[in-house]
Image 1 (cartoon, rainbow, N blue to C red):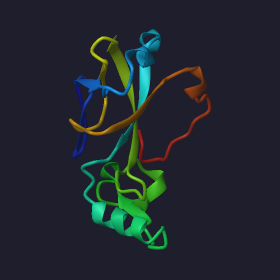
Image 2 (cartoon, rainbow, N blue to C red; image 1 turned 30 degrees about the vertical axis):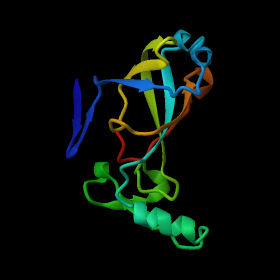
Image 3 (cartoon, rainbow, N blue to C red; image 1 turned 60 degrees about the vertical axis):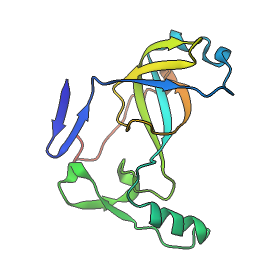
Image 4 (tube, rainbow, N blue to C red; image 1 turned 120 degrees about the vertical axis):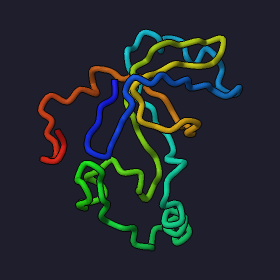
Length: 145
């Protein structure tokens, strides 16, 4: 299934493998297969504003980071950086929720679907999705549907 919103296209049915490095022992994946979804923390490694981020870091945060971005869902209009999921951030860390398809402890890998990150993106951490993550009375910006 492909969900399209103007010029934003997200491939929802893609299946991806996350392979853990050798220093992550296979038992670290034990019990993960009991969950249906996982949070994936990653680095926006293909970020187009890396020079701005580098300048911000080198100046120890004293450089003023651009406070507004043009979110794809706003069709060219801009809004405050922290009201979007834009990769153009002072700290290029991303978060996505994925459906957990399988866990293979021997291969040190998990298979997930529904993610919105690029191939070979560096993954920082994986955390299970649990009932504490559900927000009953949530609200969203008017431009989110």
